[in-house]
Amino acid sequence: MNEGILHCDMNGFYASVECKLNPALRDVPMAVSGDPRSRHGIILAKNEIAKKFGVVTAETIWQAKRKCPNLVLVPPSRGQYSHYSRLANEIYCRFTDRVEPFGIDESWLDVRGAYKLFGSGFEIAEKIRAIIKDELGLTVSVGVSFNKVFAKLGSDYKKPDATTLVSRENFKEILYGLPASSLLFVGKKTSQELRKLGILTIGDLAAADSGILTSKFGVHGTYLSLCARGEWKDEVAFFCSDNPAKSIGNSVTYPRDISGAVEFRQALLSLSEKVSGRLRSGGFVCKSVHIVIKDPQFNVITRQTSTPSPTNLADDLFETAYWLLTTSWDIDSPVRMLGISCSGLDAEENSQKQMSLLFDEEIELRKKRNMQKAIDECRSKFGSESIKRASVAFNSLKIDDLKIGSIFK
Ligand SMILES: [Mg+2]
Image (cartoon, rainbow, N blue to C red):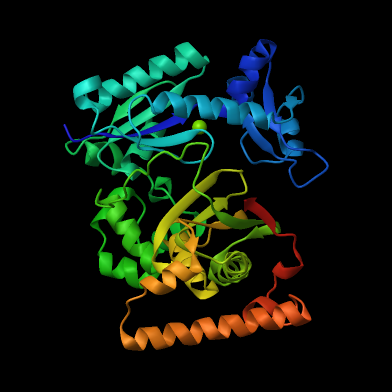
């Protein structure tokens, strides 16, 4: 009974919440959409009736109206979605403290420590489905498996309102015929490249030589190979309550979606500069780095990891953030918003006392710190624009001209 990782996915979340708030919407084709006059003017979610007319998520309002002229459009009630999302996560937390939200309507749970209290992973999934329906009036699909990636595929396998067990015995039978693109973080370009290698399904991916995948896709290739074989080891994070440890961070919503290594590097470098500057001016170092990625459909994911040692240097934040991004996101998939934040803050002077590095590393670190100090002094004397990295100064995104928002205080 090793299947204790659950992925819970609320069905048609935005539209279901709207229909719950206004039951008259249940009987008409309806969709939640952004503002028709702005870039947000796309379909964000639709109910089952609109789906029958062929309305799909992320198409423009204009395209949807052509298919379904009577489509009722509702602006997003973001506060309500957050409210129901929080209630759902509170329900998950009754079973385990390992609850990792993945966007507003999905969460992973690790319930391996709860078998004695609540039964097997499958039984817990069934209990959760019943409670969500009873208390929130919403439905959820749950995948139950032995790793996060397979649990996510499981929640997608049967919906709405279903539980799918993807076990060590049946995973090949259930998943290996699915297209490789259904795997988490396989975007359009990656699946086109895989197709060229003759890799069409998850089964093909599992059978492929992992060395070839790694040489073709770098670290993302290793990830793909391990995922397809059910060997990607990624723990479900502990649930962060509403009272997170103090953190400092910034995010940017780009005027157009960004993708590819060059743009991601520019974007993360610029954010790292900003955040590290705030850390230094506050006299802090951080022990962990988080990234936030929002895709064009407004799905949000967050990833986090510890830094090798406490730091407030832009290079360290950048390297950590870039590693997080490339191991958890298909580099060719578009991104609408990116954020970096740092937590595990400590006073800079404490960290310098604790430093016990090899001599060469210490010299290297001192050099980096001195350079950073010189840059900070230059900026405080002549303004923040006075000195920039060449890759940021000459970037096509004009990142420094954009408004960088603070995501954490
Ligand atoms: Mg969903």
